[in-house]
Each structure stands twice: as C-alpha cells, then as structure tokens.
Amino acid sequence: MEGKINTQLFIMGLVSAVLVSIITLFMFFNTFQNQINADLKADAEIIAKSYEYLSENGDLQDFAESSIRITLIRSDGSVIFDSEKMSDENHIERDEIKNALENGEGYSVRRSSTTNINTYYYAIKLSNGNILRVAKDADALNSMFTSLLPYTIFVFLALLILSLAIGSILTKKIIKPITKLSESVDDIGSEIDDEDIYPELVPFITEIIAQKREIRYQLGKVEREKNKVAAIIQNMSEGMILLDLDKNVLLMNEATKKIFDVGEISLKHDSLLYISRDKDVNDCVDKALEGENSSIEIMLDGRIYQIIANPVASHGEQIGVICLIIDITEKKEIESMRQEFTANVSHELKTPLTSISGYAEMIEAGIVKEEDIKNFAGRIRKESARLLSLISDIILLSRLDDSQREEAVHKETVDLLGIAQKCADEISVQAEKQGVTVTVSGENCIMNGNITLLTELIQNLCDNAVRYNREKDGRVDITVGKNFIDVKDTGIGIPPEHRSRIFERFYRVDKSRSKERGGTGLGLAIVKHICELYNAKIELKSTENFGTEIKVIF
Ligand code: ADP
Image: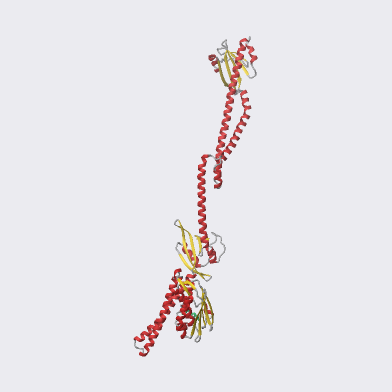
C-alpha cells in the first residue's frame, strides 16, 4: 500500500514538476516575446521620430545595431532602405507591412528556412506614408532559453525532490494508523487520540480495535477451552491415543505412556507400533480404520485393559482413529468374584437341600423304620436351619451391598458394650454346651450406628470364637473400649497362610468343622463389609492351637 501511494504521489509530483517547468518556460517565452515586441516598438518609435529630422535615408544606418535591422518601405511595398541588405522584393504582402498600412503598426514573426532562425518584425507608419520596419532575430531568444534551461532544470529537480519528500511524509502519515493496526490493541488505544491520525480513520480504527479485542477474547476463550480439554485428557486415568489414517500418533496422554511403558514420542512422526507391537492391538486399530468400532481386552503387567478403537470423522470423512484404554482389572475381578459367589451359593444351597429331599424321599417311600422317623425329622430340621441361616446371611450380604447410605449406617445412638453383653447372653447356651466361658468387660462405647448391623458384627465374631474354641475349658473374652471391640478366644487359631483369605465369602480353613458347627462361610465376609461401612479397621492376631484375637477399631 505504501509503495502504491508513494508511486502515485511520485507520478503526481513528476507531472506537476513537468507542468510547472513547461508553464514557467512558456511564461518566460511570452514575457520575452512581449518584451522583444515592446523593445522593437520603442526602438521603432524613437527611430521614426528621429527619422523625421534626418536628411538622408542612409543615416538610418547609424540606428541599426548588430542585433537590429532597419528597413524603410514605401507605401507601395518597394524598399527604400535596408540596414542589412537591399532587396528588390516588394514587401506589400508582408503581414507587418499590411497591418501597418491599415492600422498604423503591425507585428509578425517569420522563420528563415535557411538559417532556421525566427525574426521578429515591427512596422510603423510614418507621417509621410512610408513604413519603418524594425527587425530582431530570435537567436537572442534562443540564447536566452539556453541560459534559462539550467535554472529550469534546477527548479524541475527541486520540485521533484520536494514532491518525493512530501509524498513520502504524507504516505507515512496516511499509513501510520493502518500500520498501527498490526500492533497490540493497547498501543492502538493510546494512539487513537493522537492528532496526527485522520479523523476519518478513527471509526475504522475503533471498529478494528473492537474486532481485534473480540478476536483476542475469543482466542483466549478457545485457548482456555483447549487447555481445559488437554488437562482433562492428560490427567484422565484412562489411556487415550489419537491416530491419523497412517496410524501416526497425533495425541497420547500420560496414562497411555504409563500403561504401555513408553517414553516421549515425536507426535505425527511415530506410529502406533512405537506404542505397541501387539498384533491384536494393531488389528483392533485397523478395524477402526476401516470404519468399524472395535474393542479388545489385553493383559499388560498383570492387569487387564480394554482397548476401544473408534473411527473419527470430520464432515462425513474419516480422518483418524481414537483409542481408549481402560483398566478393567477390578471390574473383571468383581465379575469373577460374582461368578464364583453364584457358583458357591448354588453349591451351598444344594447340599442341605439334597439331604432334606433325600430324607423326605426315604420317609415317603416307607423305607425308614417308625422309630427312626424322629431322627430323620431332626436331620431335616438341622439341614433346614443351616439352609435358613445360609439364606439369611446371603440376604444380609446383598443388603450390605446396597446399604451404603449414611442414614442406614448411622441410624441411632448405640452402646457397643450393651450389644456385646446381649450377644454374649444369646450365645451362652451354645457356649456352655461346648464348655466355653464367655465374659464381657470394658467401658461404654457410645456411637452413632445401626443396631442390627453392629449386633450382626459382634454376633459373628462371638459365634466364631465359640465355634472354633477348644473342646474343654475354652474362654471367650469380649472387651469394649472407647472406640473398639475386641473378641479373644482360646481356640484352634488360624494358620498364617489362611489369615489373609478368611474374610472372603465362603472361605473356610476347615470346611467340615465349619459345617458341622453350623458355619455358613459368610460370617467374616459380613464382618468385613460392616467394618467397611463404618470405616473401621480390623486387627487379627492368631496363634495356632492357642487362640485368636480379632479387634475392630472404629
Ligand atoms: P464360618 O461360617 O465357616 O465360620 P466365617 O466367615 O465366619 O465362616 O469364617 C471363615 C473361616 O475362618 C472359618 O471357617 C474358620 O476356618 C476361620 N475362623 C474364623 N474365626 C475363627 C476363630 N476365632 N478361630 C479360628 N478360626 C476361625
């Protein structure tokens, strides 16, 4: 833009300089021409006046200077006298003579075809009717032009340089606010009051500033959104990879690096193979590249991951593939635990039911003797009781799975010492049968809780303490503290290798003893679940053939 304005101003300057030079020359020419005519006229008038007093025509020669030619012509056009060369030629047709005869004076300019010099003529009519003509060659004019030319060229160049300089300053001034637009908005803001700036440009600049601010604001917004998304992607626990159609990595988050144990990669240049050479992974991505959603499960470092690969499209055209890598280890474990639990439950339910149905079938078929029927009925009742307690434990466990809500857990104010006492009373008959003494000691432990769940917890601990106690002179000591309950027995103890697993559902150290004593294999799983609801910690100490101590700290 600056170049264009500069060129145009230069052309303008050049044209002006040429015009000024031509006009100046023309004016000079005119002035000098007039001056010559005036000089010729003045000369002619003086000579004419003087001529009246001259005795001879030849004296006219004295008036003729080197540059002035004097001619005396009769009214019929014949030459009487000529200061340069006498001519026989009739001058009546010459313009200046004709005019002089008609109007008393006449001017004319003629160019000599031989010398190529202009000659200026002035003719005046004398009182005797003759014509006095004075002539001057333009050669003098030419020399005058020659002497004027350097000045003219100087003026021309000065004008040109001046126009260039002014043009450049003007261009800068015009361009200045526009150039300022490329600078920061704040700078423009301060410049807008500058009196150098054309007022016509102010609305335009104001608009640009507003637009620039808007763009900056919108860009900032986009940048913030971008950063937010980038932060989410980088910090999400799932892995994420974005690939182009050539399987080059466009984006990869931190989780992916950890999962596949890869370092920094050069985005857009490293391919998926840099992250994983696993055929299944590559096949999964290939499928997505063909436009299909695909998913696989892979094992990495002992953990199970699900890779979901989906095609990414823009304006209806596929531009790449996005892969999500999700750690499904826990989900898989829970799934297999559920399956195991279902299988265990079916098995546990089937055993007593098979016995019950077997006894009933025998009675029905009349195989059982009359005196044995009572015994069989007792067995059926025992198996039914086991079934009932198993079912109630399963129901309780499934309820515990759902009852995560605060109000269900912290329902009322309870005293653990009171609950422990109640549980000890309930178990006393069974304990007595097994020769076990149950004691309760300690202080009141008042807390917010659900009395049913806390009773269940203490009951299960006490049941086990009695169930797995020694045959004779066993003891169960229940101690309640400010924030704990401790159940200590003098039983068979738990071998170290089983200690970490006894809280699993249906895990038993000695299956037959557990079943014989009415155990369901779910007691400690229920205890663990309730403790989790109260954020309570379980401490287990056990010595084989000596005893076990389980402490629950709230
Ligand atoms: P069960 O209904 O079989 O008692 P639990 O879940 O209550 O099931 O206990 C799991 C297993 O842990 C028991 O089968 C038993 O082998 C062991 N166990 C639990 N408590 C004691 C204890 N006080 N002394 C010895 N072994 C115990």
